[in-house]
Image (cartoon, rainbow, N blue to C red):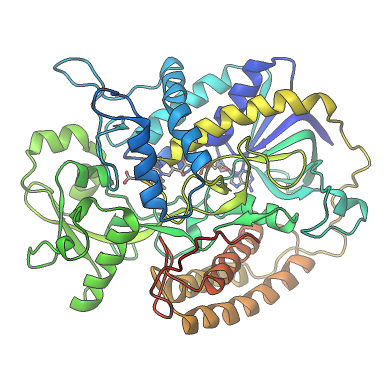
Length: 534
Ligand code: FAD
Ligand code: SIN
């Protein structure tokens, strides 16, 4: 049985920033960070475009950043949370710069070279070439690794949160005082399931893009934390709002994850066109290629259907080659590796699942509905994104709420205790899996169901079909789970099924089209905007 004052599950920007902040605030607290593969593997690491923050008050303002965020969120943002993030964001960006993060500057005057992305009315994106996430992850790892009170466990896979349910008490979503005592964790090297007790637990497990066939998210993004929180009866919100990035590199069947062609490329002048070189975005929005993501992804999807094509194109041939290379070296290298030269060829692109706007419902201090359990980063629904996230607001949100959770932990930790009555994990009656194909095939089926029936455009009949198929997959997987020695693959399958079910069920419940949720059965927005809480 391991005991830490604070247990953090996840080592991306949310988890590591929270760990650093808590440890710096009170070096006496023992802080443990679990990560299911290696410390550096996360969605954070792949972020390209950058971090949105108001940096140049002479031309930009937090009011404009707020308006852009609200506009993208299509009526479902929590204004108070938007205010918090746009106002505190620049302070948090300043902090990570002080910790060593580099952002590109203009050669002429040494000021930050602020980029533009879809839905932003001003240039306000700080970036490090097209590798912003890599740079931020590098900075955070260097900082966290140097702090003695932080212990990082790699290849430790959290399976379930521990609550009074594990002491034999009935717990439902309406039980008023559900409390988290830590987590059961699979040590991938030994195969043993260990008990991690904590006075306070923080979920920072990121998104769930792997629920779809084509996603920009790395293979760790299987929604584990959201699924664990759901099983522990925490409240979740806005799960139907899955963001598809308009421009992943079209390279069918080759890559998992698919490679992202950053929105910053459109911010620099890249234009969406069809195979014949005709721009089409003016039919959909006055902001053309730089409209918010839900609009652009739906437009591309529509054009692909009209033309019977599997991709559209991003034309960057008019951007000076040296500028493109300077800003997007990784994107250019990847394009060249598949035989596309952005200086001479249009880049083939298609939408891909990119970001989950919903998740564990948290309040302004990052608290979940379960006591002694907070959440940070992409696994949350803080109220910032509403029905559609504004580009480059995610890294910002994670830093702002990491700071707030650290302030909150300062308050709550003194009353926390370890619950040493928690029983060990009971694996009796389970045997080693005989056929891994049962798991791998189910994961493939799940991705097919979600991609075919719960994608950018939805309908009642597709969602009903998805729910029917998911039900069967769920039954089979629960039987396997009850009888088989646990493996990361089986746990991920189970979590992915939970996530798929939550997305599909809330999509079925929403009888309107709003933000990222578009259904042909209810193409209009309802007058009253309401978040769906499960
Ligand atoms: P992550 O960074 O995904 O970290 C999750 C961590 O949890 C990982 O360490 C993982 O191993 C661990 N974990 C998961 N499950 C378990 C488990 N069961 N047990 C133990 N550990 C577990 N956002 C922006 O704001 N700007 C951008 O430019 C941008 N570009 C992006 C480009 C790409 C290609 C992608 C995929 C995303 C991009 N995003 C961007 C979104 C942003 O990167 C993510 O939303 C953000 O990094 C999420 O951070 P996080 O800390 O919540 O999760
Ligand atoms: C991108 O670079 O296009 C991704 C930005 C984001 O997801 O916020």
